[in-house]
Length: 395
Image 1 (cartoon, rainbow, N blue to C red):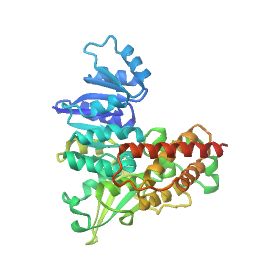
Image 2: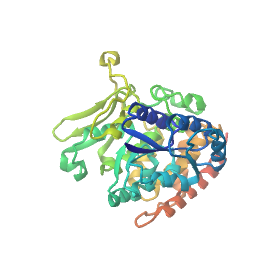
Image 3: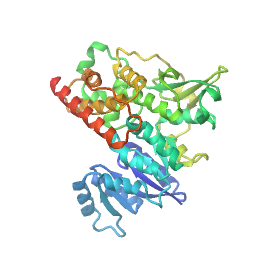
Image 4: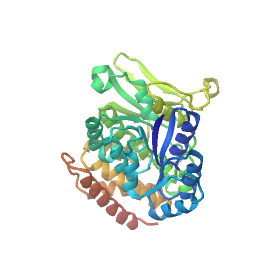
């Protein structure tokens, strides 16, 4: 049995992962499930999947989980806080760690899993955006495996040759084509974007996601963060990555080769496909996803992203080119700005404005030789700055 820790069990990736685990209960065992504050949902998952450990990031929620599971036979050991998350990410009986905690909060346990030599199934892109050098160094030193779960990066992984780590030019790769749906606001008049409500921004046309990620999709910051992530995962730079708007979300990404070939990975928009691929790799298992019906799809459209409509994408490309602490500042400022938008404190264009001003306000520092505490300090300074700027822009 392959032991699995699921960091972020109650989110959309977590729920999909548990579905895959249940389909292959003869192969995978949930050893630990974690959540932030949703004790009620985690309690239901514990009763169904019977993990040995359950962790709540929030201490009060952990107390609530204990009460909810008081009558459960063989109740899991309940832990709390970052220490609890790090502990279950490095358990000796755990082979795979699904890193699906949204935002910078997932950084510490993801690093703990990498340092412990686990197969890290990376759905938390912020770990690479904020601390790419640290995470890749931990993977190299421990012999951990890092497999991408984002549908786009997983598609790229499937389209690359096995020896791509030798360097993309050496294996004949010309560039990576990273697809984006364009989100729910793709066709909105630019002058109307200031009137977008959180509900409209979260109404994604093809993917069911959490509110923060849905807003990131609406601004295309999500794609910008994925560009930075792709640079780390595949050892390349922004000059060799192109973002392509593809509304149907059927082609999940493509790889263009020097000989003119373009390889694409297609499938229905269901996260169980990349999750199952990464869990079974290099084998293939049934994911429960319906086969792709090309006749039903009928057409595939492609557009170049409009950077006037999506300034967050341009900001992410610039942060990637700058390197240093710029990606960490970008990510932290975006998290604060998105939260302010969801609370109706700023309008949608205010997200890009807050991120841009934060990047301009804080100096870009080198991360060479720096550790996690330095990066967390940068993250906090960026959040403080973004909070102040968001208050100044309050509507």
